[in-house]
Amino acid sequence: MSYGDDYKYIPTTSATSGIGLEVLPDLYCYNVKIVNISLIGNPDTKDFLLVDAGMPGSANEIITATEKRFGSSSRPKAIILTHGHFDHVGAILELVKHWNVPVFAHELELPYLTGIKSYPDPDPTVEGGLIAKISSLFPNEPINLGEQVQALPADGTIPFLPAFHWIHTPGHTPGHVSFFREADRSLIAGDAFVTVKQESLYSVLTQEQEISGPPRYLTPDWTAAWNSVRKLEQLNPAVAITGHGLPMEGELLKSNLQKLSNHFDQIAIPDYGKYVKPKDLH
Image 1 (spheres, rainbow, N blue to C red):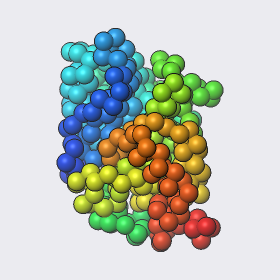
Image 2 (cartoon, rainbow, N blue to C red):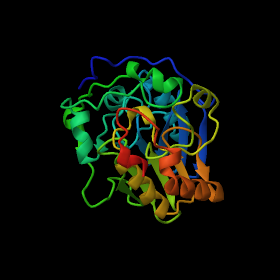
Image 3 (cartoon, one colour):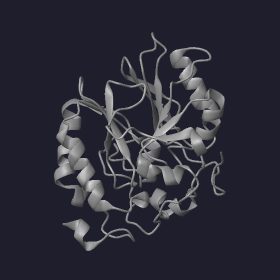
Image 4 (cartoon, rainbow, N blue to C red):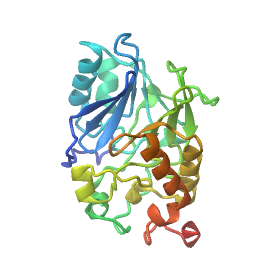
């Protein structure tokens, strides 16, 4: 197993870094620098899964947060990935070695997780703030998890997590997925949409809550991204944990997600950028 040659520590942080929030008794969101991981499972049973794997260099922090939540020497049944961008798999090799657990991702994401293919280059020319401008510095080469990573079952189920199912939400990446529980309409959206303007350094630092589309500098297919937001809005989620920003729930989530779905071209799609096509704006 190996990271790409360009993997490195990224010196970025936010006001909520290191803070964990119990969104529901069995749904915990923890912020690692500028990105969220989620722990799904009730601490009383110590039976849980980890969603995503944080920033490069964050393995010890994630292990500490996990053990604080579930007890000393606890480990998840598996790690499930919304997608394979560097800020969602940044510590995965260390976590897999420490816990010896399987990793699951969408079939279309596997080339980026097995050393075969790099994602499209970040677009520093895209409309947005300072984070977008420095995005060319972000790691982009594929990691290689080898046989440790497996495709999620094609029927939408999630191993070790029968209450949730996965939903294909491409656009930000080809194999991006979100996780949804029908019983209480809990959504883990990854970067299909986020609750902070991720391109803006000020918003990232302060975590000012603002529902937005996927990070602009790493989204190559805006038509698919819009369709994914429409798909998630139709689920009418009661609470959502996104890859970036604070969790959102209730009427605030409903109204903002509906607004994003209806006006995605105005809110989310940048006016210019190398991945923006004229048809995306209509």
